[in-house]
Length: 142
Image (cartoon, rainbow, N blue to C red; front, top):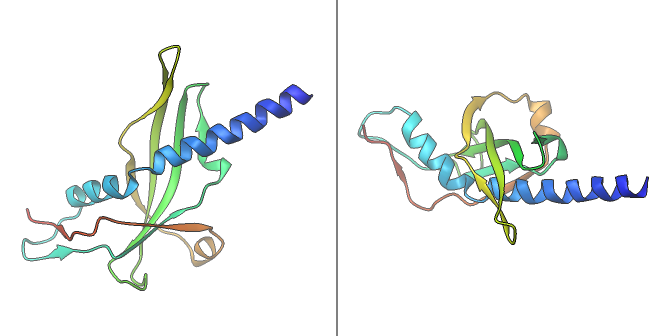
């Protein structure tokens, strides 16, 4: 019984670390994805002034085995400093634990983003944390 509790606690700690790794460059990844996906005419520039992600939740971590994990999340972004005119995106990132027998490290794939609609009730009850987006304007020139 005690060993099971220790193993469960270790998995929770690993899940939190995997989540942190999945979030590490989410701002850059989102900016890259957005510049590929959003189609605007060449005279427009998109600026993201406010962004957030859904806070850590164990339910967002999907373990496939001891070294393969998928992390799921929600990201909100707005071009307004006050967060109005907000758009929501779901994202997933696959990670793999590598080891050379001495050290181990997580290797991650680029995240996949998709536009989603949140109800006001979903949004109201979601714990979030702000993220810093790159300070440059995202020029969407095609």
